[in-house]
Length: 306
Image 1 (cartoon, rainbow, N blue to C red):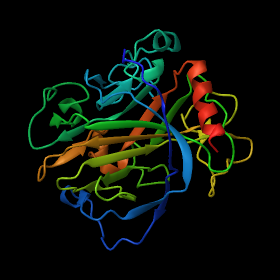
Image 2: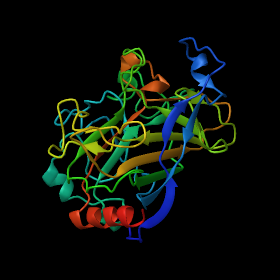
Image 3: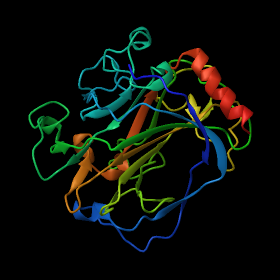
Image 4: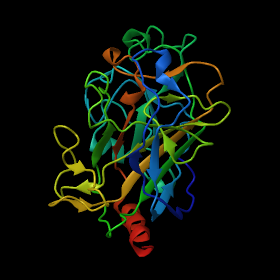
């Protein structure tokens, strides 16, 4: 279990994507998925936030399971996920097992936060013949994250309610390519030297850190910790930040992962085989296993700092 440290209260930005004109026309090919232009911008109204430190998966907790979308099905993800937080998260996880497990997060946050691994694709990895790896078309050396930030943000227009324990969420579209890049796409790729700029393509950041951002929905239906689609029980706010009717604002989770990608080497995320490792398929999952007292403390910080 990670050693407990005080939560960090700071002022940060609510990230609202505003697409600006791109001068690049993208064809569907491996080489055209890598770009130097970051063609989306973020507007950033300031709101209070709390950062939970969970490390960078130093213990290398990896598996091809998905306890949110495919519970009970080993290798159900058909690609490999990287985890921080709950040390036990896998296909067999239950609320009881998650609540009994150790965690890499401070303040005994037993939540699990996870996303597809990033690989260098010009060589073989140790799972070249394994489920989730080469068996499903995901080859290459898995890159370890340089940084992972878990941040909870206040609503820009109201106070927030506590998340219910064992709330499950997914953000992004793991089938973006076969879905023809529909409205569920939320991939945010960026470079540390170009703050506020993003793309749904793989960015060529040179010596700068390559960033992946995941924004989760923050308007809860008030009743359910999951839904059949894993999406309808928590939805995104309307323009301006207010929640739709019959939903209630909860803390907005944003996860940002950084990588030192060797300059000039090709890289790609894991995906379903039919998604061809398309960068727009980037996505992340979350199960809230914070103790109720910690969630209450977090919400108190967010609301009192408004």
